[in-house]
Image (cartoon, rainbow, N blue to C red):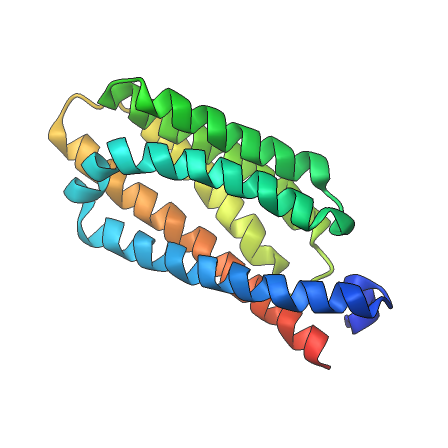
Length: 191
């Protein structure tokens, strides 16, 4: 099935303009996530311990931004799923601020697991779009990485360091699908 402009956003020019405007932000966010993923893979020890403080605040800010994004893009649907993702991010961020490294890493694994499930559902809803399979791949990969993270006891330094690598891989795959999917939709809208 070949997609056209109307299959992406209907025949409403205003929707086309809003999609084009928001796609630039999604692509930028995807690139930023890929860079952060590469940094986490290159410096896993730093990534793991920096995540104790930074990740907590990133989740809180991510939750707030997802709430704002939900209301800015409410015309495109999936309001409940976007709000649920924002709520999960917010709760995980607050939980991470108040717990030890073992709790933080376990909560991180749970969050990556839930995000993976969310991405799988999202992938099947995006299914007619080009590159939707990358969203599915990232969701499945996230679930696998989360299971690995949650199965450790996080008492030795090797597991803590390896967690940083797994987080980097997850960030990299999330950034990749955001860039690939958004770029494909952008190309469709240009036609």
